Image (cartoon, rainbow, N blue to C red; front, side, top):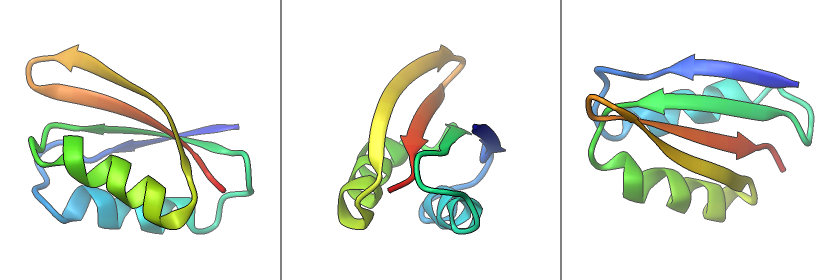
Length: 74
């Protein structure tokens, strides 16, 4: 199952903190589609996934400074 989280307008570390909170109740294998416009997220999100055992499935530029991250929960 895929869940959405719009973190646009939030700056580091809030996108990752919101993602952590949103992933917490999800089942292993569920996917979180995180949309954010924080330039630091390009570093923070992959690091967060690596540190917590989640899999970063895809990173996609959505235009207008927004990036979509697909994160599979460990």
